Image: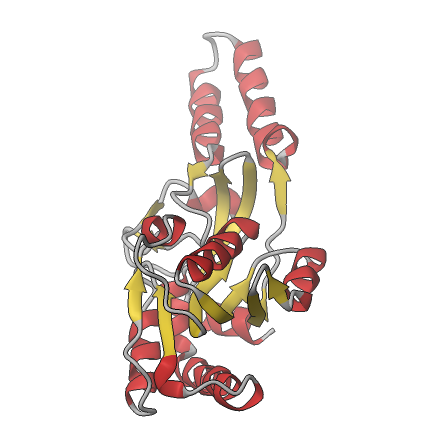
Length: 260
């Protein structure tokens, strides 16, 4: 897959033990790095998405209002550069909080709204886009997601969704990157950590060197909490590449400013 190959080249893959709400993951992507690596492909895809709106859907390009959920991934700048060259209205930068709270303003009937998202993990962000467009009085909505991290059934559902209430709706995904996840009570990394804890309890206060080794391993297996469902922007404090074995990385990787 192109995205994962480029992610590996950019040092954007992070292996480890990460938690998000009740889900646990064993690797994540730093989208800020991989989007920089995919700049040409991203801008070409934006051009294609824009052309679909103006030709396939048949809307006037000057009437398209574009919103981008960037969250420090660099996506907004890439989109802005493309639209500046094509006589579109400038895109507006949205925070996740703004997207979750539809605007309170007079609707503009028969308008077109285009959302550009770095990732989609569940239906929560998708529903926020639908509600936001409805609050704006849109008749047509397009949601373009760079990396869909949903399973195949959810992906097919949204790509097959053509209408939401009174809005003509289209969801487009550039990449599909379903990340393997487990529920909190079924996480293999948690089970391994608990096994080491049980071993530590059994040896008591003797064998100090073994206790130190076990405690160090337990610490490395603790889950790093994600701040948001969009993605994790994980940055090595030492600036090293993020690809690493599970037990070797938790102590060296923190959540950087591009965490979603």
